[in-house]
Amino acid sequence: MRYLYFTIILLIITTSCKKDFEISNLNGDTITILGHGGMGIEHLYPLNSFESIQNCLSIGADGTEIDIQMTKDSVLVVFHDELLEHSTNSDGAIYLKNWDDVNDASYLFPPYAQYKVVTLDQLFSDLANPKDFTFFLDCKNFNPDTTTAYYNTFNNALIQVIEDHDLADNVVVELKRTGLIESLQAKRPDLKIFIYQGFETGIPLAIEYQLEGITLDVNTIAKEEVAEAHALGIKIAVFNTHTKQRNVDAIEKNVDIIQTDKVNHLIKLLK
Amino acid sequence: MMAYTLAAQHEEVSCAKNVLYLEGLGIGGFGSINYERNFIVVNAHQINGRIGISTLNIRDFTNQLNPDIIVPIAVNWLYGNRHKIEIGIGQAITNIVVADKGQPKRGFNLNANFNIGYRYQKTSGGMVIRCGYTPFIEHYKNYKHWAGLSIGYAF
Image 1 (cartoon, each protein chain N blue to C red):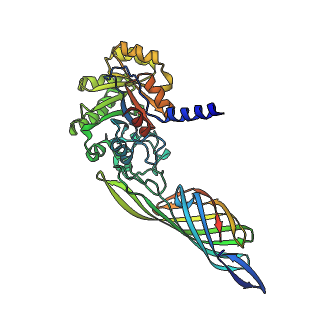
Image 2 (image 1 turned 90 degrees about the vertical axis):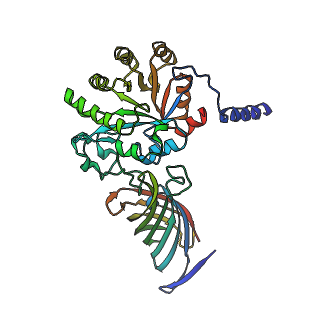
Image 3 (image 1 turned 120 degrees about the vertical axis):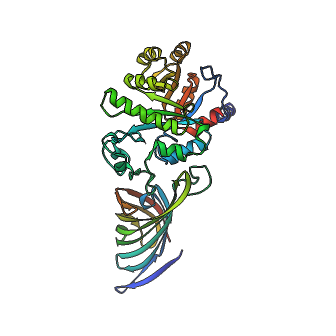
């Protein structure tokens, strides 16, 4: 019985202590801690709201992932879902609306708060010291338009905001479509780009377009595959870390960037 | 036990006057602590008033202590003896911290709320369990479906 108590106490002590990880990656053997849309999907602040993003930066994260979409009149809006009715008091797809039609949208949860949907420009204007942080801009191109004209318009809007706030060194652009990558590289070859793809398809595309890295689900990549990407000079960013265990899993895989939903936990583990 | 008596149809009934309860979800948002007091008790009918306190975030988005405040108030009509029907209407007074040009700013708002549900409560007091449909009209703009479950004590 005494040994049982001892084992339980030992387990409590060992699991509650800060862990020391031996990290080996392309990021100077450190992991960049990013919030997922700010404080993540389970927080009281809605994903991508100004409050969520500023809160994430205020508690010690290195930066945050931000979802962006473009309105019909080429305004970049910070929002995750394809349809506004999924999480706001408005409805429809952002790419089918002008900013004036989205301007009044506020998030449905938490009750009574009515946090507002904001533009990327507003966000960067209002954040405290944005140049101290890293922003992964996850471009949600729900617009089915695959023309060069659309790609140019989207990238022009993106570059405009980045230049207006002098954040070229702080921003990493996450893209899924190769047409958008080609268009952005033609305009601003200095901007860091990650491709949002699975490992098998992402690696050859990252090599072909000389990208900084790949963003993918933490559950879909093994430690050996991370090492394989690193050997090719390709960084790995992971998302879908909804649980503390997934934070630990991501660290142990030696990834370079974690976009976490458990921001406080990851900060406690790594800082 | 604080209790009072009333004469109703020639019989004397000992009736708990106060209730303290915790509500999960409900008109306080995600949860609230509430005090309720009976104003009128006639036979199986009761009218009571409720006031509570709730919050969302204790620290604001700049990580400073700056709690959101939600005060649900309501007037309820109850019918029944041990098993009661409850219908209520009220306001939730909210003082929530939101961003204004990047800075925390407290915003004061009124929100209408309604309640229809079931309550278990002995007339003389003791354990209280209540559950119901508790929609509210947020900022008098957005109708929101909501529900609540409470447990407390009448005395």
